[in-house]
View 1: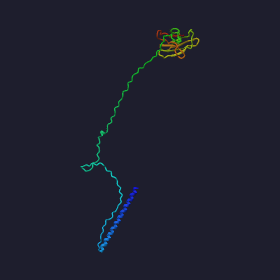
View 2: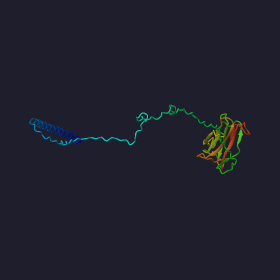
View 3: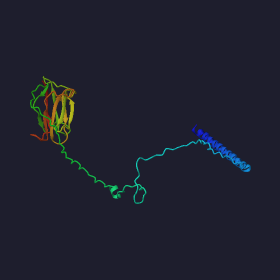
View 4: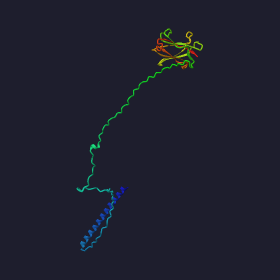
Length: 249
């Protein structure tokens, strides 16, 4: 819409200029004609001077606001020209670039391993000296040691008989055997055959050492004191037959 207004104003300006030019030309032509007629008739002509009518010219002015700086530009007095832009000084490259120094790695010392001395835990069976405790079974007589003649196929042997209060053989009574290193664990019942009724035996193998025999119930709980038997050592190291008899209280 503003552009169309500019076009219309421009056309009006052209029309006004053309109208003024026509009026001016017509006026000059009339004046020139009157002068020639007066000269020909010899009658002085009264020259009328008139002020030409002012012409009104419509113009469309498009003004663009100028940006005025509120700050005055300094002028170099020696040359009369404003100085150019002042560039800040460039620092030396050595000041700008900081040399990278590789950090020296540090290593923490490893903790010193403390040597662990293995502790050998040995479990030593304890012989109960009190054979008259509150157990259902006790020794019928002291342990009897002898050399040879007890069977076992040439191997040392712990054997014996289990009887009731009246001395009758008892079959099916369990006995448990172990050694001082707790490396032997053998449990067996007294025999039920008529020829060996109530008897039991444990063949012994390996080097000389102490053995322990005890009467236990069907669940493996002790029902007698522990009796120690020395094989190949002690007071009778040459003994190979160790008879241990038990009797019910």
